[in-house]
Amino acid sequence: MEEAGFCVVCGRTDQFVNEGLCVDCDVKRTPLVGAVPKAKVVICPTCGSRQKSEKWEKWDGTGSATHLAAEDLAPFLRPREGVTIRTVSWEERGTLELRREIDASLALRYRETERMMHVAFPVVIEHRTCTSCGRKSGHFFTAIIQLRGPEGRLRGSGRDRRVWLQETWDRVLPEARPEWRNALSWYEEKPEGWDIYVVDTEAARSLARWMKPRLNAKLTESPTLYGRHDGRDVYRVTYCLRVPAPNEPTRERVERQA
Ligand SMILES: [Zn+2]
Ligand SMILES: [Zn+2]
View 1 (cartoon, protein in one colour):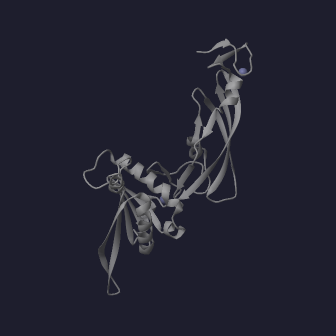
View 2 (cartoon, rainbow, N blue to C red; view 1 turned 180 degrees about the vertical axis):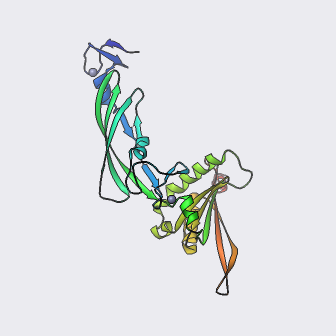
View 3 (cartoon, rainbow, N blue to C red; view 1 turned 135 degrees about the vertical axis):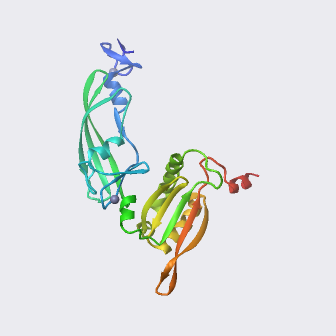
């Protein structure tokens, strides 16, 4: 509840104060709107679909595969409690294809006052082939990386499992070699986790082995006979990475403690 009183910072007594601060001092101390620290938009370069958390959404916004739109950017703003965002105009800067500097000019309402402010933050664009474009392209792949939780009975919802698996994977993936990352074609959601389709078996093997210690995972490799080509057996290889559940002590850690 606001009442006129003494501002502990500037000493005025003719303003409403909230937790000891007049509105001007309050706004100076804590910006009214911030932005998420690692803003990223995942876009299918073929059809422009956006990946929102784990689902692909067909894109009919004003942006494109290369241009970000208000619908892409608005979710990255973090207004303080009590702030109403009236209008935003967006400006995109930067010359890098996959990293943009965003400048948002905002008109806001806060504690009975109208205010203008700017929020600047970077946005990383990641190109990833969406499920339907991956399927349409004729199922071309030579290997699958299966990203899974721990062995045994499935606990919790498939959606939660996919979200943490994807977060774990995405945290490490940017450090992997670009040629491995470029070989990843599309991701399919499964109740147990993710199937990641890869167009190059060598890259899939290297990436899975590189990921193993970084995800603290168990890795199994299983080739399946796919058919014959030019008189030779053709195999597709599945690399299954089993990631320990979050906060679950791994056997290694338990042994070290013992
Ligand atoms: Zn004040
Ligand atoms: Zn697509």
